[in-house]
Length: 223
Image (cartoon, rainbow, N blue to C red; front, side):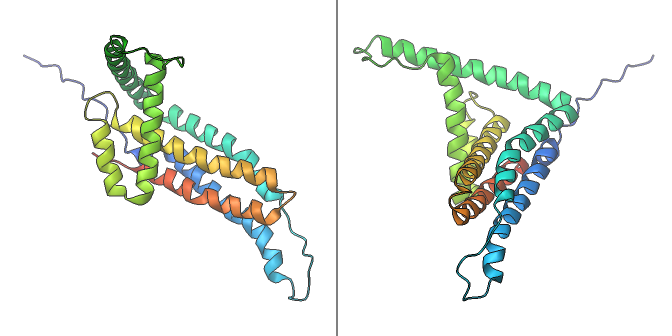
């Protein structure tokens, strides 16, 4: 009598493997931000004390601001291509948690409908509320992680306890929140590069801790 071996489920990659290209791109972006700031501050530091006007270069500030979003988008696409089974699994989980959030929002909306008038401003639909809840969770976790990583890890578990959110999608939303904040700082650096090179350099450095936070969140495994 022969038995057919059961196929073992695929081993899930650690988050730092799953997001390896993104992490590498963020690390590269951190270095580019520091280099751009150095091209502004370096000539000022090298100039003799009696020299008033110092010529600096803001080209790298502009370049990193323009290339940053594309670099990160390409890295995400490459990570997805490397781990198709994990992408499929995460999409299935996201569909399930999204449906759970919509169901919860519908139930809450039904309770509100039997109460007083809702006022002139329409409330978000269940679908809109479901998306907003995930974004809000990511923002909250990212902000908390900067203060206290252990507290933030506990917050992730608290937010996902009811099944309306999953650990990976909350952490990924937090990665997005940190990344977007850094990219917004770079966008402002680009806007001020010509008029205020020193401010542009400072904004490049302001972006760095947010990209570093995104690396930490992309690497974090709570299980």
